[in-house]
Length: 364
Image (cartoon, rainbow, N blue to C red; front, side, top):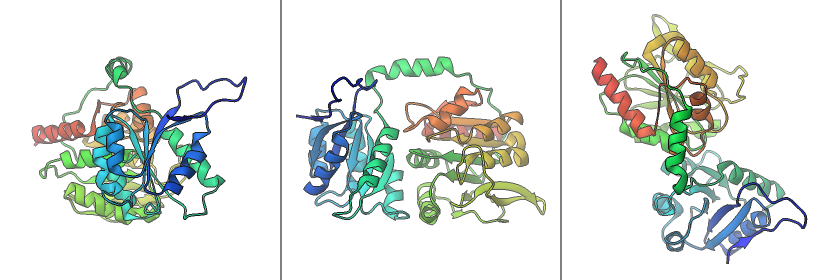
């Protein structure tokens, strides 16, 4: 029977149903600790705890959950290998990796995010689980929230289409593609980059909200998924056809003209969103240097980073494409741009790639 928390007598019930959790960890101690940490909070309901990916697949064949807490290192099939199958079997659940392998800067963390995990959290060593970890875990689970309701998907899509006003599409050839993303963005970025043909030659700039220690590994993952030379951006580096540059974790990736050609400029000024790196300065600088031939893409992420930059791009008639609600883990960033009437298209990432490819062919 699911472990469900009950409010104190006389307390008001939560406005929404509890977030249903499936805990997948081979350690009985870890399963018990996670259950104790979040199971007594009214925001959550522990649907089940299981010791393996195969047991999780059996459970998901007949049950729906909102979030899967998944360990990486488990006997039999490890968490990373099982991740795509679990996402498919869950019919919309988000995955939070909670593992000692998810240390800051760990390659396993980037791999998990690229494969579709919504977020990651490093598991403390045995005996060091504390109140701070409990609070961080709960915050991440609340931020990820409920899985999409399949029965309401069509209604939401219609509501979304009617409530968003799109700008007209440009027919200019893409001179520079600038992509911004945060929570849930790595999987979306993978779909987008894999969908671009080798013939798409515009330089690509990426600002992904990650700490500095992740960036070198992240650049390697982007190179693998895109098949394009990729590196962490450094000041003064020229933009080149077919090359991908990712923002360093300690600065904003911007573009300026130097020696008659566009080059990287790294800044670290405070921005409205509070993000470092931020999508806003990148998009604004692309608008300034490339005008209507620049294209911005805003993928899944919390908050409103990218909105101010999208305003600058719209002011020079440059296109901004945003990820649609249904394919986004968090529709904060793309939703803010769409709600402001700044988006020229609102699509899943693979369809954004197709749109970019067709525009590149037509303009050739």
